[in-house]
Image (tube, rainbow, N blue to C red; front, side, top):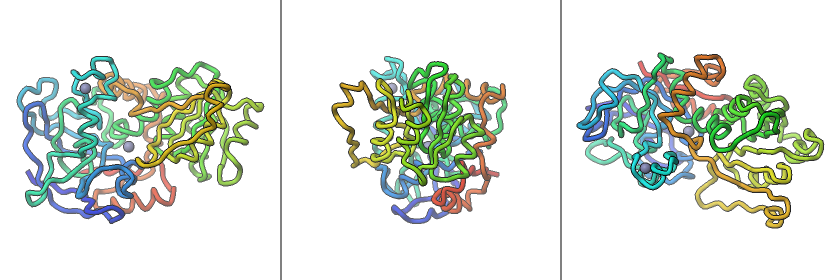
Length: 363
Ligand SMILES: [Zn+2]
Ligand SMILES: [Zn+2]
């Protein structure tokens, strides 16, 4: 089936709107019609060549859609179902899935590294982020990567659960166990960082210190539950965090940008026994350095968080229920909605640090 899509033909190029072919669903797959897609920083990382997705590719990994056709053996979904697309479609059978860590699924990891998709143009394959390809009007992907929207949440906000909300809120409520009253710093207040902030608030964190270089993002962070803000363009982050915590540092520092030097500084900003949670993805070739003695003598540590350490079938419905209960902000994450044709403007806005999220809404 034909569909319109925004294609990245080469790194650091603008996306080009063109017609593509979408394969029919095979066993265990579904074809979906896209309804909405967030534009996430990880898409930008691919454009810049920092993540190993080959070109030409169709980006977009924060989508929601309506099921249009189901392949053989698919019983959990039917035509017409509204779904959130997960960029980790857990196989359910590998070592990690069986161990309850579906976000680390081996098969999904392999799919991520090869960047395959069921899309093509002129007979040549198009790559994608895990087959989600939410910058296309249609895509075909594993049914295990489609989570039903059970409570009627509208697509323009439900799509955000597919990456930013799952990743950010999940980091705060799944990856680590924040105790009520503990102190948290969140470094980077874009779409994911704001979700870490609201996740930390849900967990009952006391001080939540938001760090960014853009004043408008810090103002937004306050609306999501930040109790203090630090503009790291004006003052060194670790010193400011020490100052706000009586010289102790924070229990948890979430690094949501993916810059090695910032991870190092976050390490200096946690208290003895504190942890840095790396949510942002540093470039593949980068290394992170920290003062080695503090690992043992101060019992500091650095841990990673992938996709909010989540089980998407368990967690995504919970996020939608938290939204319905008024305990999770989703609408406030959307700074603009645009048609697919204006996608390059969304990346321009992201580069200027202007917005939380641009959301593409399909007609
Ligand atoms: Zn993302
Ligand atoms: Zn698996």
